[in-house]
Length: 376
Image 1 (spheres, rainbow, N blue to C red):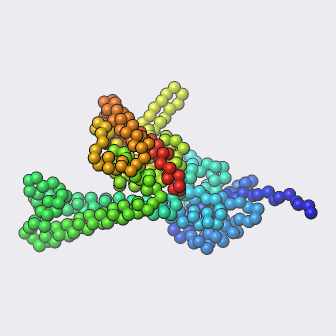
Image 2: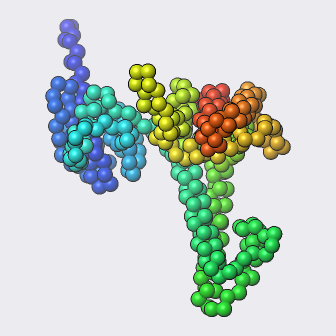
Image 3: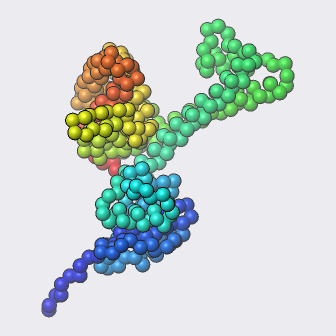
């Protein structure tokens, strides 16, 4: 029995401009210019029918769409259908100089064309378990912002009233909250406003406590628990900082080098060099802002001489020896680095430089902890 030649696989590249209710579609075959396919509803059934029409036994589909508020539902659906899909970083999509017209149709055509040429930069897509942990971390951060705003409203109300806490009572301490209900106002309206602001502050505090307790509970069951515990061996990185770093960065082994992880934080300097001229400016800030903030807060501890407090020893109790040795080298290195740079550049720039190097040590811990490899 003779067997004929196997049919050649045909590649078709699909660009999707995704919105809440609709998706603009464009296709680009290997040897033809991109064409607009039209618009479909943003529904699972419509997406499945679209892929069936565009695909086939001899057609291999590749899909791309920009990261946005619609999340990764479409990405996961396409992968469940066996179709390769990339979610693209919008800020890194190449833009033609002089192109001032932007429509959904043009965006889809551009994505299809750039996907075919390989000029798109994908973002990391977390699995659903990791995304849920990240949502909880961000919800707790939002609650903390709301609590701060509620406190500001109350303090700005009390200031023109001349209400000052007794000597020795610091703002927002236990004694301060015991003093607030004792305030007396002449007018009923002021009493009602003060009670309302105080109730808002109390509710915001309870919300933060509730979410923080939930975060500790969820962190005990995540596959990244070992990495969360290991990061707390660093001075300046407690539980909240560690779980936030893990939630935002994900599997640290997805970064081949420490420099790439530093760039992901946005803490690397800008550079405009040409020929013999070299110029480095402010940090790029083109990375994860929450991650950069956590590393910056932890970097402030490099101002102090290396030491092991009782709390730090407690956190290092069940951490592998290799991680403890690495965190001690980090203390020595970062403190010396801060003292050297502070004299030359000043504290703010020195802190950011230390945060950048701390990111390198965090990356190194991610390579030491073996359980990190099992998290996607």
